[in-house]
Length: 253
Image 1: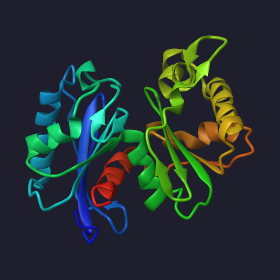
Image 2 (image 1 turned 90 degrees about the vertical axis):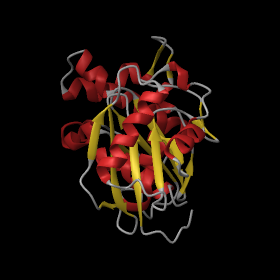
Image 3 (image 1 turned 60 degrees about the vertical axis):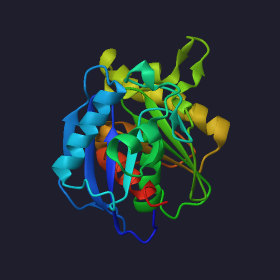
């Protein structure tokens, strides 16, 4: 794909919804209304492909000359999905990029959803012009992470799966936004769990900046001031549009 493109389509596939839009690659803003459809029950590959077709048709961007990037909730290596979060287990070891390219009749760029959110913040948001190591975390059903070092994405970090040895649970089972909802925690009690998580990341990786994404980032004032860290921590700029914007940006990389 040519890097001279000034616009591209981003599609963000999630466990509950699939959303997409046309993106201005100069500013990182949406050029169209965001289209969203439910993720089909079971999220089998053929059904997800059909839902993506519906999104592209609604956006009127079925023209293969417009670059397309797709974000997906899985580890993605060389176009193959190596894990599956809130989607069918058939995606594990699946040639997903080729499957979508064949099914859509066009070239695409296929990447992990947290990674593309990191790219959106790197190019158009809170990580722009930041030197050193930036760790973006998305707090939702789980915890997604993206590592950005001196403006370069280090793909497929899965730091939401750090283990809490005393409880033998993943960090995300303890500290994701879904854990707050599941356990009926107020902001202060949830922030205590986040304190453990971010302090642990800080100790392991000595980052220069934390960025907090996901839908809960719109409530950042309710919990970020409760954290005591040596590393600056800020909310993501693009929130729920980060997957769309980052996927579109990677489509011309």
